[in-house]
Length: 285
Image 1 (cartoon, rainbow, N blue to C red):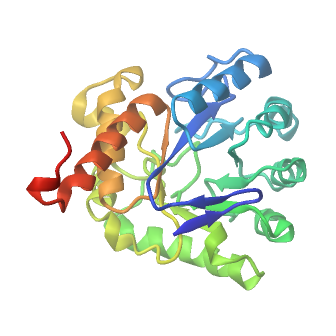
Image 2 (image 1 turned 180 degrees about the vertical axis):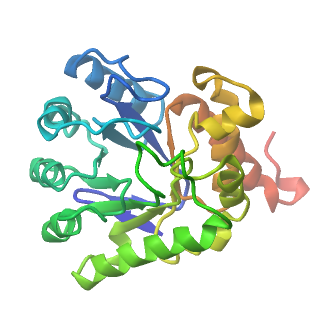
């Protein structure tokens, strides 16, 4: 499998790591730690040194109860960093739901649109379809960020997640967007209870994304804090554990803050898998 994006055809024969670059003052775990474009670019370079395959730039927090960011402010935060990040030689994703930001980012050369609304905002579907060459990640969200955790979804989340993502996918394909450009994200923590989040992980293979790459983001999520008691900045170990479990259950990409540690864990997994079918006489020292 692969994910076709504006400039890159990303081979998904092995799990890929998407490094998070938060350009916000109010993200739930690391908001405000990047003082400006120079700091943000240095962070991008650090994530690449640690082994990130893709960088995901976000200029509006989607944490529970987050207030919307005005268009001009999102533009001010995002576009200067995007211009520089596009020179780094890897796929650059833009985390936005605003059609105007999508268009401007794609005009600059962004490779992927990563949308928490799964292109359900007016004009978003047209913005991506009109470009025609970018990759897109459709994420499931129940409700909207300001209120989603006040009234989370009820019952089994899997059918609703599948239905929303399938509907947005069908709408894109009806406009000529190829299946290999469309990735799915079940939206861990977006309008779901901890139990529902863990149910989605336990039954992840039943999501049945078909030809679409599956991207999963568990990094530092509150559900991990619920079961471990760890504060957001202390969730490294549970975040890596959840990323590994997601990969074991079919995720092609994991979206993480802690790239170095996630890459190291995936390398251990790869070493085990490499020996899984090897005869005892051929095992390397």
